[in-house]
Image (tube, rainbow, N blue to C red; front, side):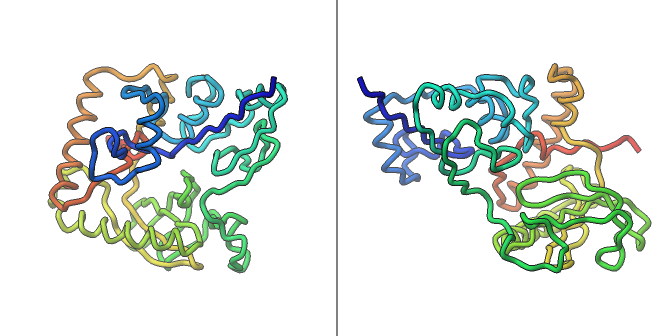
Length: 287
């Protein structure tokens, strides 16, 4: 008896209210509507991780994020997954799309991989300032924007990296988001700056809305730079520091109040935050 073909289609971070068949007629999703009508549709589901990579790692390995150590753009390809089981069972396994393995081109049990992830800058010559994926190669101690002295890299994501820096004009510590050198990401950064300026104009002088302060933007070596006030670590970092045991109810209440204050300002300027996750909730040191 021949083995049945298996096709798994996964959309990335798709909300439940973006499927027309579930009563959201503002969405035009004929293919998904047919799948819902002719197949089995789960109306309740559990998401093991708040980011796409954490959830994808959990789905493929059968392990929780605190077991894989995958909470964001972390390596998870070293853990055994069910694709390897299919591979050893005689299936020819092919992946088309993105998995966010680290490194990105590992097999992960697949015989073939057609990697379709965020665009890179491999075809853009930037005088050695970038790596092959368009990330700016920062140098500790260098000055960018004629005033910011780079200290160290403190974060990295799909859009670019974030460095801690010192503003020599105001004698303050800042965080600079360095967007990848690619037109796709530059256009996204332009839109982000427009939204940040809208929020800044609506912000009260005392900063009571609790939205991060946008300070400056400029271009350095073909990279759009966005300067923010320097805050502490984020909510993911806090949760990881507790071995995923969580925090007290009093702290959760405080976080909830602050987040709602921020969203209230977003509502005021008619901005919808579609991807609010723990990495976006920054903590502020008492000092």
